[in-house]
Length: 98
Image (cartoon, rainbow, N blue to C red; front, side, top):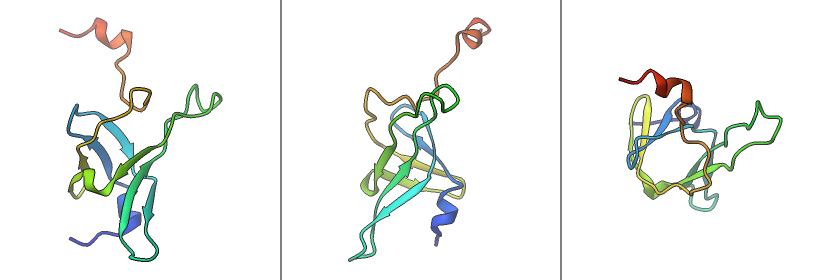
């Protein structure tokens, strides 16, 4: 399957270790000498509507990518503890869980 960098921006990245949605690919890092892709970059989410800055970007090494599908990229990586890109469940939603 051939894929353009612009196609990668539309794909959502999911971590296989915990099923966490990391976001969409925002940038690609590649080696200019060899032309190989080194990593995918996912920008950190904005804190308080972007007024308080944003979380750290997530850098996914090419070796951590397991599957690139039509709509999703599956990765297997350990996220840093301070990463706030994980989808957190709100207290309101937990009240209505069965």
